[in-house]
Amino acid sequence: MVLERTRRARLAVLLALLAVTAGWGAWVRVVEPLRRPRFDGWWALAHGVTVERVGLPEPEVTLLVARVPRGAGLRLRAVLLSPDRADLDLLGPAARSAGALVAVNGDYHRLTGSFCLGAPFSTLVDRGEARVVGAPFSYGCALWLDREGVTRIGHVDLGAALRLPSGRTLPVQVDVETGDDLLITRPPAGVWRADGFAALPLERTGAATFRVAGLPTTDLRGPALLRRGGLDAAFLADAAPRTTLTFERAGADADRVWLALGTGPRLLEAGEVAAVLDAPESPGWTARVARTAVGLTPTHLVLASTYQLPGHGASLVDLALALKALGCTDALNLDGGPSSTFWAGGRVLNGDDGDDEGAAVGTALLVLPPAAGELGLR
Image (cartoon, rainbow, N blue to C red; front, side):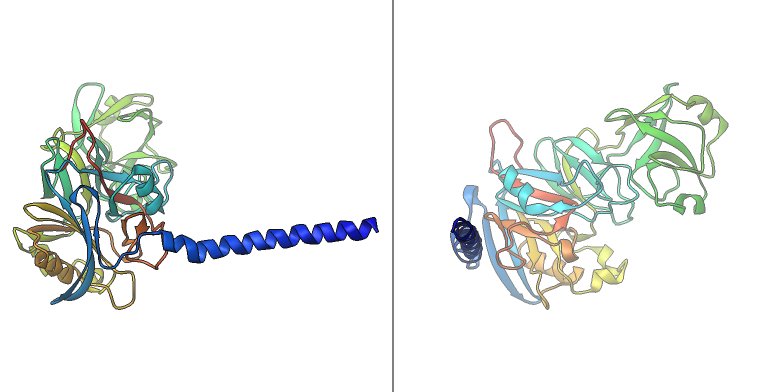
């Protein structure tokens, strides 16, 4: 009898657990979506930010478009989503925790072979702190704000220099795989040797300082200072093992930049399709795939994305023409393909219905409400 009661009790507990699980599943599938704000093609968010679905006949493309008023105190953040490891991360949680009104994926990224952990393979500055300096592409271009909040799309010159103990400075690039001058990088195995670089191993000791970890080597296990053609005797005498080297920003815009994000290519310049699109760098520029872009009108910052659905992609020229039709005078391509993510109102709008998290991406551009004493875009 006791055994029978025990079996019945266990069965009751099991059935109760199954009921709770089924109820939770029903909540997630049915009730929770009903609680999310429904997007019917137009939202008016706080502080004058609007989101709408725009269908254009020429070029034939449907975009999700956020218009962010300039001069209203709204703030931008350029976020490295996985700063402590070389990995991608979800856009939605980062946007939600920051209190963003709207967010889109950032620029092109490469998360292997980088000196900066988890760094995008392009320029990234957030609130005046340069996380990555210099883009390796000839078409490198960024969205950037100066320390007055003036917003631009174009080349940003952060520059970089390495100060030696003697006081001598040498121009240097960071997080770049190839080049003709000094590089600080962790390149893919074998690439630097094939390109004729000599390597001096480094250890990072601070935000802008490095210690020479040993003599020139062909066995790299961490960040290194590379130079094509070899390291001359004068340099090696000034950079003996255990010597501290200091990294400095040295470009014309180094002390002016508050935010910068982007690789490009540029889409619009002075109201016309950018000349760089006349000679596509790769088949990816002309393919019709998912895209994300940022543009400027005289009164607004515009964030735009295609849907992540078959038949909804766009070439870069189509994207440029679409941004022009939206009234933009200048525009920049951000990362596309699987990374293309448009987040607003607590959810992703350009993916599968019910997706709150978005794609795993390297960086994100967030639009935040105004805050007293903090810089707003102009």
